[in-house]
Image (cartoon, rainbow, N blue to C red; front, side, top):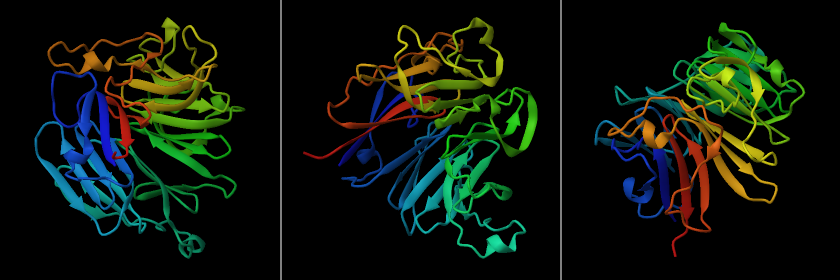
Length: 352
């Protein structure tokens, strides 16, 4: 099948003034005539990574140079920041690609903690996340690592559902709906209600106690969570309006506890998923009549990175509707996501 990508905001392939929806044909870009399996994309601040089967494609917005690395086995997961990309292979091997030196090195850290019982177990990495100051891996035995250091092994009754990172902090979601946070917290991004320089170990976000959470995300210095009732909670630094909070007292302020977000003109919206960029937050919602939409708060991506009339001002409006790309093909499957400076739709359409 052909795979197309639509990007709003900073074009991750090449710098240009037009920051409206840009259509990118990934099949042509990575020189694959047909793509028959899953494609993964990660957009950092300067570098973009596209993984397909055994190949990793690296692109930089500042140059026309593009690099492709082939591995012996398929890539199953990616996580990237502005300096490197973590690559998890189907064999369980974890590698790090360094953007500046253009080198790939293995990361062998599992079982480094002094626990003879755990060392005899068959470790495998189940979750990856990569921030500017933290790179997190979680294992099948509930080990949590700030690579390469072992942070904690969670109790057996805790099952990890998702892990995400901002610049300095980490969030972990368990299958029973609890949210844990740790790392840097000087901008309230830990959600503890306090301004904390650093939290060494995962702590439950007490502001979400009694709320079953089904999705989380983080970027920059802010965090977000979606409850099983379809409510959205945000916290952290609201310097760009990315928290989507309507009360002016939160503008350009640190919000150190999770706050429930109110949506304009429609109290019947159910939030399904949340995605964070550095200065923006995007949610997928379903209305009472079954209509599905995407909403965005924070940066106006069309103006923010338009070099002919760039605007650095914050946007403290409510969540607003995110218009889908005009070229969207009806009936095609679209996957929504965010990069550091982007929103994207990844489309997979079968060849006629």
